[in-house]
Image (tube, rainbow, N blue to C red):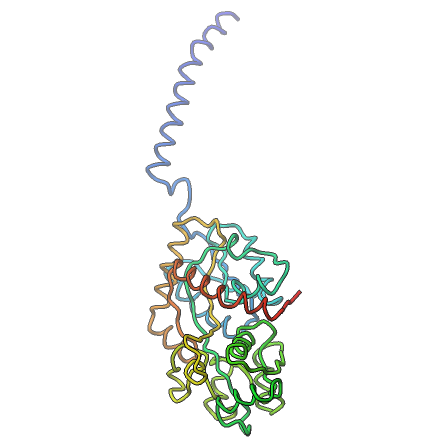
Length: 339
């Protein structure tokens, strides 16, 4: 028995040395061929959360880009619609997702700029929970009146808003929407007042404008483009920095009201959870850029009525900072709250 134990003790050091050598070799293999330890990204379908219902403008844009990005990624990009609570439901789901590049989020200026000022309690933090991948699109906002309105142009509308404050009812897709806030900013800047009539979405607001229930409305070139082009409603100004190519004779709010540098949009960007690895985020940025540069996608965006917004993550951060400087004080000054 003693002899057998002595043999075991003699063999054990060599076994331990062999084990250490094997571990060292395994470590070298992992360093030289990292794919052996971790599969290349992506090795499974990617989920893209859209905080709006299927069939709307945001959903359509995401689906167009998802198909093109899937080609570059080599894996499906699946749209997951999470509508409700002013995008908070979808944003919360994305904020709580694993930061591994398999969950994307369409985040608009409501999600990232307005909601932190509109809600006392948010289930996410736009800065701590998300990192930008890039820009997606800008929606151009249009101020329109009903087709038989006695207000023939923007000047007539603004003059009445100054001389008879609150006498003009205007519709928007909802309290705290870009459309609503753009009009309230115009009113404050120009010294006028209009009566806001909020709706639950762009379609019902536009329908009541067409029916003559309200005198005016702030719509956008996606929801209201056909009605504006056909004469079913009469556009009087665009909130963009320059004239819209689809409405070249329509003045901007800045030029019509004499408000230098006045502009307002609804815009969207692509986000991932904050702790997503740099390499993965960079891959997604590259694929998004490629998709937005595709002539077929650019043509389809124009047909829908939106402007592609190719922007680097750093440029998205700059847009956020500029928007917050304008809209957060306005929201707080108006005392608007959604909870």
